[in-house]
Length: 183
Length: 354
Image (tube, rainbow over all chains, first blue to last red; front, side, top):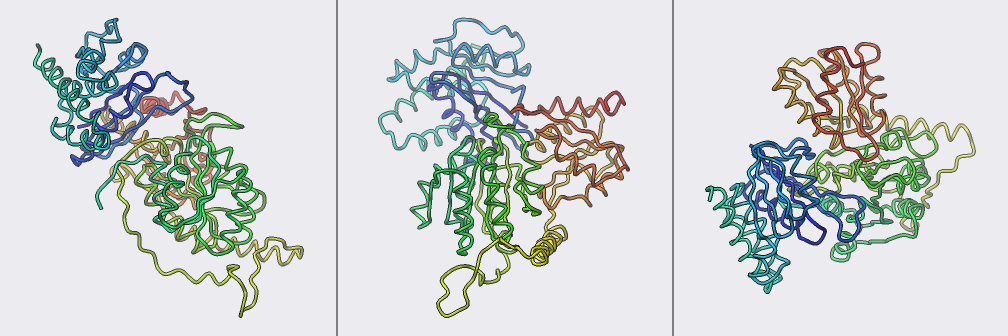
């Protein structure tokens, strides 16, 4: 079993960090993982994305032209990556910033007002954690407690932000689970 | 030791330290600057030397000097930077000094771009600098393998008194994978009694590459050839994939490209098409005998590269006229997809390619 997710957004929205926490969680569960950033010339405020692969088998190609899932935090990312997804995948969409609907009826769409939720919890900077929680809630790609453990480790040096990030992960997870159950 | 999730460039830096590479010279260049960044932080902790030189030309001559003094010296750079080091590399090879150069290759020619490529195969494998020399060339295809090959690179550099190049494309430097730093045991090395360590109480050692007497220069060349022949006998490394069952075609690919080929092969299996892969781990010495042997069971071969066709020449040299050898490549920083490789294989199977 191999799951690939592309995580994409503006530079600064925290997609790279969200991807690292996801990959780290996979590794701690004994899975094979790859975290592959898009790298190339970029301007400040430009787009950023990474691909995370979690697999039970050694990972052959780290290049995934058609990921199963996508986690998009802004409109350019939606327009670029949702069309590349394989049918049957899960698209988590930050509807705080994305007002258009994806033109796909063969993927499961999970709408999350990530910025709004993060601001209510305490910091708009944590919208990436709402998205990550929702993605894990909607897919169970890794157990939530394992994700929480790695997230806590990642934020242990930033006590102030840690509690906000953890709350955002929880809120996102609940939304993802609800979407999964079809509510 | 537990696995840690590390970016290729940082893992390379750590592996170099653990292999005893305590003398590191560099000049930053994308996509490998994180090696230098990592080592600038780590080297003081382990009592090593981190030096950012004024240029890559200086780096290669610092390597020459440090290696001549008998310490484990190394550098990392990327294509245009490595080109600037070629003069020094030739001197290091001529003076029979151990040094490790790591090239995280970016696309070219010229300044090119910063995206992954395998366009420096010729430069690494066929000498690169002036004069008649070879480097041992190791090509990892994962972060773990990079970490495992670096101690080998340092050991073989010392053992052969010859520069060793580790070549990875930008992907190897930029991606994160779980790594484990294993203990690597090697047989004891001969003492570096040739090193310029101060000659009090002994005859002075000279590190030099100038031979005006043609007979002496030819002697040096023959001595170097003997080392390369020994490498060809003893150091060839490769990975076989799907060669344990009958196959129609044999792909040859190294580094990240080999991993993409594996996914293409898995896709082809679903369509009932059986293809095998030979992944050279040493590009010099090249696994030519193994390719010859595996080629006998294939109708044709295809070299898959992120270049316009470089390793394919060595594959053709290995099989001669016995089998057709095709080529598929993407360049300029474009990474081939498994689907493209799959389709290239299918084209040749139906005879519509060639």
